[in-house]
Image (cartoon, rainbow, N blue to C red; front, top):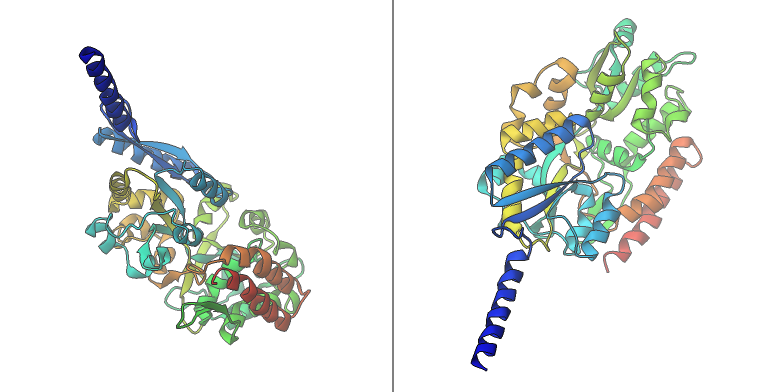
Length: 428
């Protein structure tokens, strides 16, 4: 009887030890395994991420990181499903404007006590605000891209127009005048690819002092479309409908869709995200002369909104400390530069941003880097319900306004009246 009891106790103990060893780690030696879901998609970026994962694994035998490939096209729904199913990756690559609902929903870990001082001090406070929701920080902002003007350099030189610089940019009024001057039969001064019109409009509107979202003393957010918010939409609307310096045919296009017309001499300029330079380098005809110009400036200068790429840790991860250590490794200054170069974007880290590779005139790196200090969190970063407001209210309203189907007063009414009804549901 004693022998049978001792056997049963030994068996129970063995099962308990086996369960403890297997939770969240490999069977051999209890090694921790972390899953890192990356949204890198460009060849250079994927290679940089995978190389860094390999370097971590080679130097951290106790913590293995598995690279998981995700997609920007489906990341929100995919993450929501994995969170609710208890299968979320430990380290999550996303964008700051996608984090609010996950942060408020309790799916992401508050990183304030997990990150080292080195990393928190290296990234400016304005960038941290993009991933701050309530009292917590739920992502590390590490890559960002301003919107810039990609211009046909030969066309601009031949026209004799003043070439803007970060020190002396065009105003929005000057930009409108110059695009009209550059236009002619079958040729346009600018092409606006506004398949996703909301983020482009709101982020550029910061230069004119536009805010659109206003948070009251009680913390509630309301939409107010004021005079400063009108500057950018009216410029685009008038370029298309009044000046005919921008074609209406590109309003429903993505940025890549405008490149053939740009290379073919149909458009003098295209406003694009900074990372589009890689596609231009790869696709431009031999001898095509192009340059990067700063976006127009308004009452607040070159300020514009961005939604930085972020790295977060899942709240359900059993190894948050190890996950945060991997994030710190990935974002050391030298590594952050590698990620930035791979994605053709700007790092948020101040030390990484000083790297000489990011200050060359080749491919417009210096122009983009000069804009880094003027980048601010996008206006909608912390607004709960923003995805629904954007999809159901703002996107169709802006599309109809830019196409000339509705006027400015109707645009204002729909953004404010319909928009506030949507946001109210999230703020009860």
